[in-house]
Image (cartoon, rainbow, N blue to C red; front, side, top):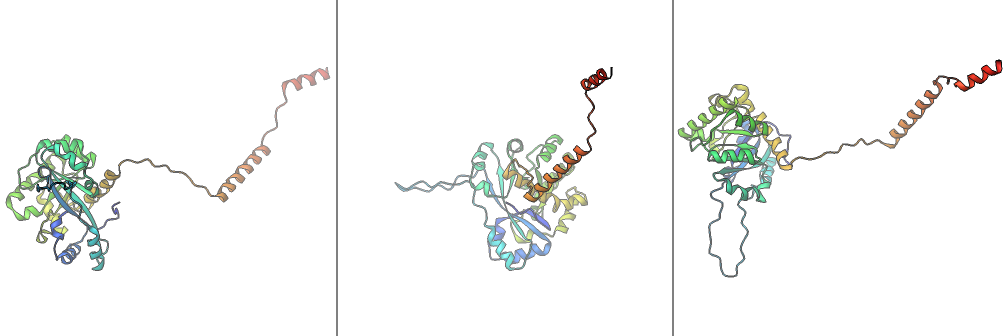
Length: 307
């Protein structure tokens, strides 16, 4: 189960490539100095590119089973590195980001054994049809969008409110906005749509960084939130309160609904005290009980004797 006692600022979308070189220690120190205490290492797959590269199989060779979802990054190595560097209260999560174009391919992904190993799940719908299918039929934590392309969906207040009620959070990236002006324009347009149709509820801001130099301080992100149509409180919540809600909701999504039986456990001494109290109450009731009225038959017999 994920650690719910998370602290500090959050970045729930740092690409796996940032942790695949010899600069892990310096990168972790930078994240820690910025104030980040909970990060999610993201791996991205596309439903249109699930098949492995075909290789000629020799005669009699057994066919290997292929999982369309890769194994998540081993965060234990990062935990040990952070502990060795004295970086306390540092939480590492795994995230799977799925780019969806055709809903028919989602079945293979959702049934994958590796799919259940990820702590967080985010979807990037590439078409409006895929967006509506994900919203109606798939349980996820985050809905994000590809800033390289124009906005593929048509939002409405009804759809936005429905997703908020289901616990979905909408992700805005700032890393791509630093890289390219076209991506920046698309992200600002998407952010303003969130403000128009949902008053920017359930918004999280992540880096989406594929390189170390794209990480920024949380205080810079709070200022950037004004450009995305968020007020100061919403900007702070986008890197503090809302990401924590994403983590809490992900635990509920993974473990599903459960029935809990709560039973009071009473010790033997307490049970004897309760019994003694009950006995004393019964005795008091007998002492205080008023005298019984004489029956009607006894009264009639006494009247006859007098006569």
